Each structure stands twice: as structure tokens, then as C-alpha cells.
Length: 306
Image 1 (cartoon, rainbow, N blue to C red):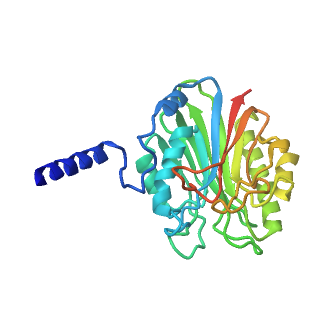
Image 2 (image 1 turned 180 degrees about the vertical axis):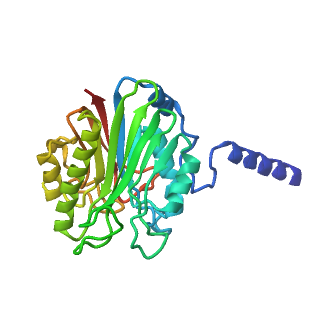
Image 3 (image 1 turned 90 degrees about the vertical axis):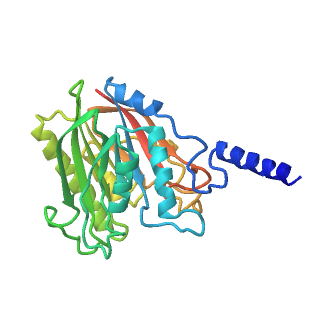
């Protein structure tokens, strides 16, 4: 009888090992994500570019409700692999998450600069960009501060903290298609700082495009901390940039505060210049394995080079 009980116990243990993640509350999904989407993106040289904007909330979350930073790292990496953007602008990412993503997303390279002025390494934000390193060559990169002295680490007087915009210029190894990706996180306190951000980014983009003989597709991603009617968005639109999200479809908040905000409008946006055409815009609303990947939803746009 004891032997029979022992055999049943061992069989149950073996079955638990076969069934993915038995008793493992920290798993991302039942099986490892397929890399088919990533391989398809790497092979696509049609001039179509998939870009993503994502406020990661890297330092935040709580172990008590399952949104701890350590758990969400894995969920974030799995979600990015399922979308496989050509390039991705991230906000509220710190050095720990960058290191983790470099391990878990080996197809991507990263550029970003710490904004400075933060109290700890944990909260030291970068507004960096990940890009597919086997598909694109990095031609140029840079960072400027949203302040009166943008070329030095600094803060706008009325802003809540230092704010930056980083950019990369990428060239497709196979086709030579070259585009620039700017990424920012505008201030949450000062409307004047946000307005300055929109105007300053437009000026820096214009200067970069001129250095490429006036012919350079550009995408701008970010957490704008305002809705589409805000002054920073208006400044970009006045400079000739187009919001990739149709205004009629801006009917859900992209900042959802861990699922507690269910009504409102977007504050995370993707803008493009006329060298790109918008194919689609997506708000990736929902959870992964029952957990919110961030307190913001990712937003993505497929763009076609004209």
C-alpha cells in the first residue's frame, strides 16, 4: 500500500514537471514565446517599419498586487517579443531594466542617457530606444534636455524634474532605408515645460532632417503627460507632424494606473513626418498572464516609408 501511494506521488510530481509552470506564479506564459514574429520582422525589407512607445514604470509596482518590478521584467520582454518592433522608445526605464532587457531581448541594441537629478539609481530615468541590431546600423544618436540649456544636464525652472529627449538614426542593412526615432517623456507638472518640449523637439528634428538633405523619415514617441489637445502635441502638429492615432479612436486612457483608470484619453503618442504613411495604430490594452505589464499600455504604429 505504501509503495502504491509512493508511486502515485511520484507520478503526480512528474506530471507537474511536464505541465508548464506547475505551482510557478511568476511565469510569463505556459510555453516559451515563438520567435516567428521576430524573424518575420527581421526579414521584412518592404519599407514598412513597426515602432512602439512604452512607459515601463520600471521602478514602480508592488509585490502585494503582483505588479512588482522583478516580475514585470519578464512579462515586458515576452510582450516585446510578441510584437517585435523595429524600434521602441521607452520611458521610465532604469539601468537595471536595461541590463535585464539586454539579456532577455538579445536581438535588440539600446541607446539611452540618464536624465540626472534623480535621488537614486533605481529611479534614474532614461528615455532610450531599443532597435533591431541585425536589421539596422546605428548612424547617429544623441540626447538633449527639455530646458533652457538643452545641451547640458539641466531642468526647466518650473518642471518637476529633469526631462530629456533621446534619438537614434537607423539604416536598414539590406535596403539602405534610413529613419530617425526620437523619444521623450514630458513633464508632469509644468505646462510651460511641456510646450517647450514640443517646440524644442520640432526644432531638433528639423535640424537633423536638414543634415540629411531634407529627406529623412522621422518618428517621435513618448509619454506626453497631456492629451492630444495639449500644447506640446499642438506644437508638433504645427511643425508638420501627424499623430498616428485617429482622433475618433482616442477613446481609452493609455495611462491606466494598474487597471484602475478605465475611462479617458491617451497621453502616450506616436508622431510621424510626411516621409512616413500610417498603416495602423494599436493600443495594446490588456494584461499578460493576468498581470499588468506597466501602469501604461504600449502604443504601436506600423508605418510605410513613402
